[in-house]
Length: 424
Image (cartoon, rainbow, N blue to C red; front, side, top):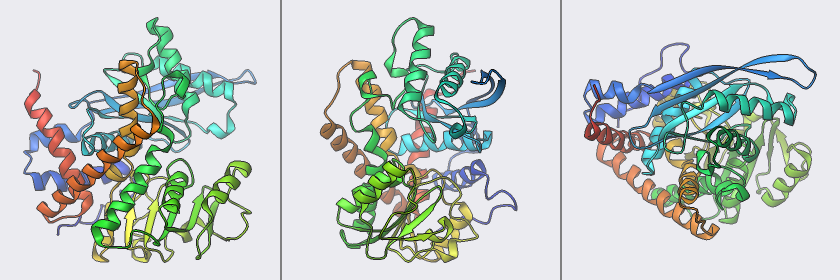
């Protein structure tokens, strides 16, 4: 089994470098020629834009926003928009590339895109966020569209932000166009099941991973990093499947109970208090301690670069199912492979969200909407098929599930690129 060599010093935290390392290994398995590999590795288009916003106190601030289209070989670019002080161009590039591979792994007809604005939404009012969103949307009008680039929510954005985005685009095109974004409110063309999709997809991937490894289908001890739509809802689904979620975290810290947490009560507490802190019946832990707890399954569902060469050797989980994008670095992959840890990679495990986003786009375009049970059943069918494809590729190339997923994805995108040819 091939494993990555170590990352050059100082580059382990760069998510785009981490994506490139996996891409290069997988393209080597596929025998991809250097020219096509370079095209597939390089973002097709990217923009950095200044966003002047008048704040509530009358002052004027200028924010920086990005949008990267990594590939449109298989269809319109697809990917979320995040608002965070930590947004960087390399992060957005990496996330856009991961969206390309993710859409290809689950075989939906999208390419990859991603966007972000450097800001701290916790320190901004609702009206400031609306002005920020609308100005950012207007700066992207030459790039986006239902057939070109379809944004969605991501870190610190939500269905309200998508409603502002849709309205701004519609005002400029002089026609209500609900298919310009996904993750919208149900009443504005959103899809049933979209909120639950990513968390449920993670839980289904845990189920399929345990089945693949011959581990118990119930009663496993599971640790979840993150308590949002991915981590929190994923943990709830796993609890309902009969597993013991022994620890979960939010941005402020973690809670732990070796006997298993009462997940409905945990999520009710979080909804009411806005933090896990103070929840009764659990001990308090630092977030860094959570990752190295003794457990059967670890679900990192917070942000990238959580499992690195610094802590990988201390990971005690038998299985890692990545709810977040890029939570494990390439150097950590190598260490975990030596320990025999099975990793269900992000571009497979958290693809439930983009799968249902695809369903939302389809429903908007045909003006006919499906019941939640049908949405989630169709998503499950796609996720299980994708898992089987990834495991088969990993076996065929004698490599990890992560590189198996990259092989599946790159092969599908490369096929489209070769069949379309290069316009010159």
